[in-house]
Each structure stands twice: as structure tokens, then as C-alpha cells.
Length: 363
Image 1 (cartoon, rainbow, N blue to C red):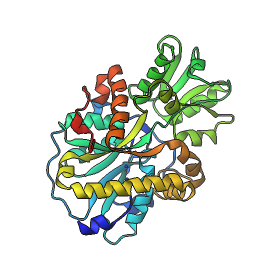
Image 2 (image 1 turned 135 degrees about the vertical axis):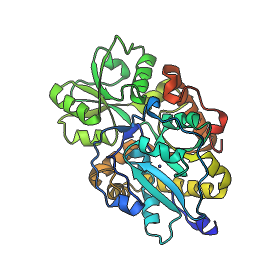
Image 3 (image 1 turned 90 degrees about the vertical axis):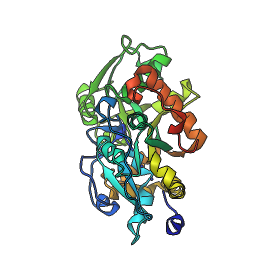
């Protein structure tokens, strides 16, 4: 325990709601850093696993724990970008305090958390609420790691406000997941009926949206997540960012924030290992702060980790990925309001019920 407390570093999403990578996993930080991955992936983190696809599991079972290693999972996307400094430092240690594995989809992480084979994980915010319900309080959210990563992009006509979307066709991913709920909420809050005043065409993945934008030509409008937005700008001539949906959320809802990813911890592990958890959270916060303050160096680590294919692309995308560290009451206030918006639109999106007070670790 003393050795663990001496390490100073930081952690993981995604979804989805945001760009994840492929389906392969790495067995360690070192192996994950040897993989290459493109920015464009089949399911953004911002499109978290629908509640109907989350297997019903019993409360996480007790597993033998090492006093020296915390097992952490992350998604290949923005929710893990803030952890790359921590990952890099741990990979250089002979006896790492944290074992970080990267996954291509949130549904690969769910059973491992439920069985107690992971201690912490960075996952989409609404999936955390669903897991809390499915495991009967078996997981808690320890921190918010990523705010909104959704942007409205266009290839022509000026879009300067949500009101300018009225009458337009919007291409997006995320039917039945948070991008749909967020877009519908923001349209409604700006006096636009999402069922009659706009036409939203949902595609299965971001690459399909990109292809549709290219085919539609000038004036096309789409909702895309970072870092895919940055990649798309390099491929579609004249593609510009018109609206940051995080900013649009803040204009209509001052009591919460648009949240993409969170770090969850198994409740049993947190109860049995409070000092380890607190040490990790300090290192996690330090890593996120370092990434935000050192984007050029962080971009190379993001590329080395296989999250984004090219460092210049990662460097450009990082500032738009809204990486944060929010814990305690600040976290609870931001997340609770966000989950309430999702619940009001579709209760199943957060597991059928709003999480209880014990969902918020340290709040």
C-alpha cells in the first residue's frame, strides 16, 4: 500500500458517447501502445451501449485482489485520452500500480466489471447508470472525465444557432442512444420540434455519415463526435464546425452539463481499498491536467496508445475533446442533471430509474 501511495499519475470511456476503436483488447498498457488504430470507428463512445444490450448480471462477485495493482479499463476514444500520461508512466515501471487495458467497445467491459475482473473503468455516462441499476449498486461513478464531444458540422450554409437548423436534414449516428436524446433535447429547448421541423437521418456509424456528407455536397449538415470531426475536416472539403453542442447545452441548462464519459469503480473494491482508490484518483486527475496542458506531447502518447492514428490529428482534436476531472459534489451536480434529461426522454437509457445517492462516490 505504501508503494502504491508513492506513485503520482492518472485514468478512463465511451461511449458513446464518442469515437471508440476496433474490437481487439490489449493485455497490458505496453501491448495497447503497440497497436495502431484509426480515428474513424464503428461506434463513437458518445453512442453508449443501449440499455437493452447490457446483460443482466448479479452484484459483482468478490475476487482475490493484489495489494499492488488496480485493474482499469478504457475505451479507444476521448474518455481514455486523459489517461495516456498515467499509462505511459506505468508502462515504464517494473511493478506498475495500475494495469490498464484498452477495449474497442463498452459491452466488452461490462461483463468484466460485473464479475469483479476489473476494479475501475472509463465508460459512457449513461452506461454507468445502467450498470448501477443492473448490479444493484455494484458500481459507483468516481469522476467525470469527458464532457460533450458532439458537434454540428456543415459543408456550406451558415449555421450559427440551433434555430438555423429548422427545416434542414441532419445526418447523425446514435439512433436510440444519447446523441439522439441530446439532439432532440437541444432542438426542443430552442423551439424546434425534432419530429416535424427537421429531418434527422441516422446512420449506423460515423464513417457512413462522412460518406453521406461527401455525397450530399454543399449545404449538408451532420452531428459528429470528436476526434472524428477533426479527421472528417481533413477529408471533406469545406467542412466546418458550426455548433459545439456542449456550449448549446450550457445555454439552456445551467444546472447540469453535457457529459460523455465517467470513471466508475466497483463499490466493493472502493469500500475495501479506500486509500488505493484515492491515490489512483489523484494520479488520474494529474494525468488529465497534464494532457490538457501539454497537447503536443500528449498527442504523441494518444497515437502511441492506438487511440488516434496520427499525432498531428490528435493534437488538433485534443482541445475539442473536453477532457476534465470532476469529482465529489461538482460531479454529482453535473451528472445528475444530465441523466435526468436522458431519463425524461427514455427511462431505459439510464437503466429504468435514476441512480440513488450512493451512485456518486465521494459526493
